[in-house]
Image 1 (cartoon, one colour):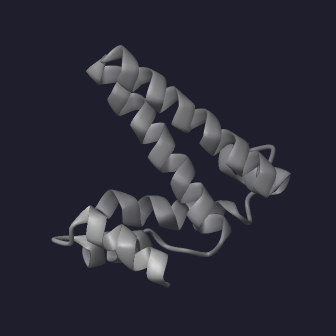
Image 2: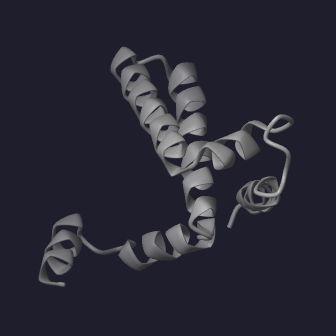
Length: 106
């Protein structure tokens, strides 16, 4: 896993105990799941808009925001980035059609 993801996950976990008035992430945790999800939705929309516009720099910027807020959601549920990477690893080399069909059978 990327060292950046590891370090970021550690910081996000620590922010759960931080003062909401001194940390953006702590304020998200303090406001609760609905605020985390709202922010994640906003970032997803902004990423789509950047993709539609085709501005590569903006796509990278918005995707970073989207990934960041996805990591906040994972941390909210005490999940690690490793869990997502393990799932991606499980899917690697598997046809998307096959993988989706397997999920439907579960």
